[in-house]
Image (cartoon, rainbow, N blue to C red; front, side):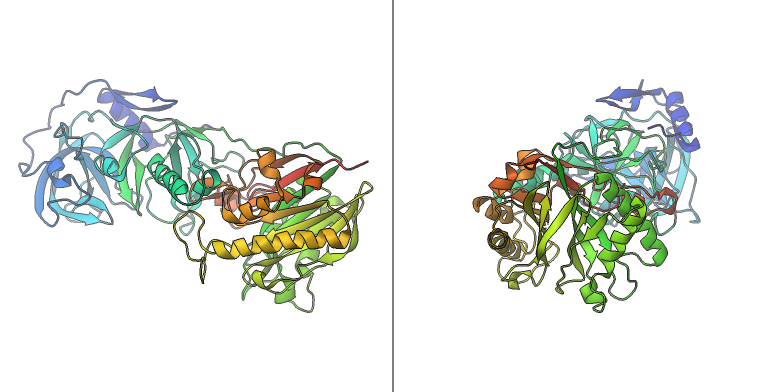
Length: 606
């Protein structure tokens, strides 16, 4: 991925070169490196004499010991964020106090239009008089009374930023010119389209704690480690890019930055704090000097799985065909068509015989007179794209939520056997989506498919449903009860069909090590994803894991030849969604949803 440098970046590089600095590689990336530390003329004898050093302003804690006091400080400009909304610049003491516990840099808030405003550039030596204050966790000098540019000076040597780092260690570098010592991996792009932020991590992509550790103390250890391994890369702008209709950084229609990519060149940066997190801000206030190496490239189709029967699972991101009111989906027919085009591209590329779906509009609730309106509309669109009436849908509905699950199938490859099935006891599904099952005849054999969508982690009421901090989130007790109900339902399906081949897929809203999935394993169901080391299906808060799973009876699991996760959604920026950045929209499969689809290859008797 090649990104052109902006004029401001080139000006900064010229200033760095003139000041005796060059770009050099560090751990797979590149940062500005000093060649010398000799001062240039004009650094002294300018304006008011400093009354305080920058390290004294910062102190050794989160809050300045001089908060509310008027100070005069001298420093060299190491970060220019006068444009883009931050309205200021970072200055750093050229020598520092030699203490690792105190920062040598500070932010100066000096918006354009103020009586004392002076345009500064990286490398300028300035003397600033103003009031020390804390702004949302960032120590700064504001209410500037005097701001004088004294001349030019070499930048201080970039201080090494070594992750993992505690908040105290990062606080000691706040406002300073820094260079990370680690190879940094993209672990989240969720806020890229809105705030120009990329979350980076040391040691690879961060894993959700309960994806890799048991809930409780073990997961809490991972939580702490994850917090210390991450840092935000910001673009030097403070506004909402989506709201302001500005293009997000690093993205083009066919050349995205994805979770799993690595930083190849990191432009000169300053460590700042804002919006409750430490962040790297570009020294010149623009983002173009940073580039990424693709380590997680897009693929046009899922990795192949063997077998003569293909079963897939896909989340369709609140596919609604009604608008306004309680609709959770597209805001207009035009948006809906854009969404539909991406979903169709995904479903066709899966090339499956049967597909389980989540987050389809529950037409039984929204249009009771036409309870299959949404799934029928999607199926018709799929058939139109295929050029033949090859897809059908299972008729099953329930009225507990605005979204529901669904099953679609290739009528030329499999045949439904009997009517759809639902659990006999369904009271535990009042706050979720009741599972549905359908038996199919495929290649001379019968198997049953169950599709699920358990209660989310977003909220919870009652005993065991409030987030306990063990890593499982809200409503864990309800998901455990739903897992027990699913076990009973599997047995009901086996009894009704007189066949032991049952596959249960969907969004369980539980990561791999969590208790609801333990219920299924202890009941004898096989975790197919674990058996085939399937990739992650979801990214939340910069942590990757799988909320979507496939569990099978031992009889059916023995016939599964492979399972793959197609990483087209969770690793992608929201900017590529149907309702993301218009200039980046394409009617392809990428970011058709926020969950990755799964596909299983099965070998039946023929």
